[in-house]
Length: 467
Image (cartoon, rainbow, N blue to C red; front, side, top):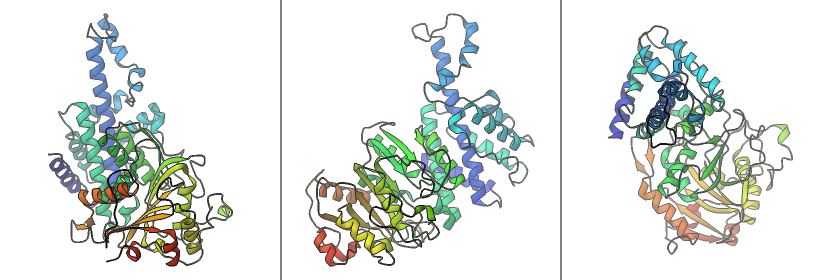
């Protein structure tokens, strides 16, 4: 049912785009979904208050009906349940009523401005670009009408979930439509699910130093809820350097009702670290692969380079060390990197990898199938790091999942939920958390550090798991 709704909405939204660039259009669509979400949530709280103010058995009961209108406009009733305050001119009904007016774009921009003014948490997050949107006449109004249908007639809790799912689905569709550029803000769902399933973040602080549109956080919260926990069992810390992507992440998390700290501003993780004092329980990240222009002279002698200074022409080992630095002693990290990171010996990379292996901070290495990403055909791998291993000291688990992908289109593969469960189960058994572990030829093997040293500290699973 929800799948059909998402597809229908996407088809219609895509038609309204006319010949506007997907990269530009996504901000219009996602921004409107966000406004509808906060407006719906506000209205639901308002209806609930109305009901409670007139219920004699309720603590909130008001015996003077003339007080009702004033009380309904009291912000504190909304803030106490984490609902954004929406002024009357910015409520969805007002925007929908004006959808056919020629100045609807300006009306939406004005609504975003007053919403930001009333809610400090949203300052700088809402993208006011509707008045200058290059859409044919009437199309923006049609888009408002389309978004009006999302979750229509549902109870508020359900409507919110539908909006969250539609937002996430649209992010994925836009990433696909943008192709190469899309990968900058979106990690394919099956990779995110694999990282989360293996790390199992269920409490404490979760951090993503290059968080894109926030998919790692949303999946972490889904994982927690699926395992009997609740929203708020983890606190979310993120950083993102691209300002428009940073806004997408903030909206994505707010729609889910997730509290977050994405730093004061969008900024480069290496040179303007927004969470310098953070020590996290879990870190998940999909940094851009092999970036060559990351270095700045201020990074010389940085305390994060515990295992050696990363080469100036490639940030892979800067990301790995940044994450290790930000882990609590008991913390674990999972990171997506290009395959070259497992075996590269150019510049200082081989030395840093050797130092990391010898320090026993590498826990699990997983080789992934090709074609999982929208924006690159470079095959990728997952690194799992542990600051201080309590079990399996002196061993690394290697998993070769290269042949476990399923094609979902001519050019795109994914890992199915069954494959993800198998991988997560293998790691859990190896860690002694669930079931008995055994090596499986061609798939997984636990390898002592001495053997890894014999192979020149290369961490490619295919070297170790056999055929």
